[in-house]
Length: 172
Image 1 (cartoon, helix red, strand yellow):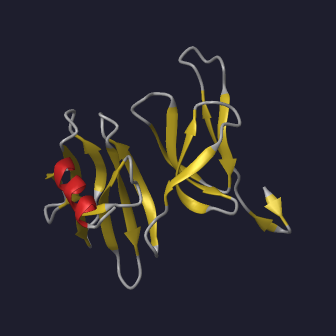
Image 2 (image 1 turned 45 degrees about the vertical axis):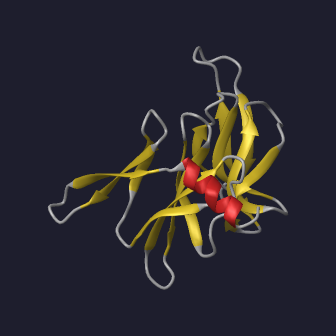
């Protein structure tokens, strides 16, 4: 698509029934990336842009023209690379990267009830790939390349109770 002589892209996020019926446009705009289902199976989360609200992880019902809200915006200078919800719906992890002044990857946990109160779980200059929750929702697995040009699997716990304690200590 060209606007004012410049090339730009228009992105769309659509859902469809398994049999190919009922195609639904959930979001369109300047950017749509890394979609994933919310554990309730009724909503989608994705990296996107909303006019007057900016870019962030958005959530929307799986319906045409459903209202959308920004769950969380990326940290200053970062862009989101991945999102994964815990199987219980208690929260989600985001993977973001910044290149200022040098590359730094950040894996953060966001409680569902206070997504803007993220806890950084891992921060590393090495590339982090494919964070996902264990089925019990208590740990997050991810990959990082090693010197042998293969990948190591890492696990980091998500301690929901300590997250609640931190919020209470901050008086929130």
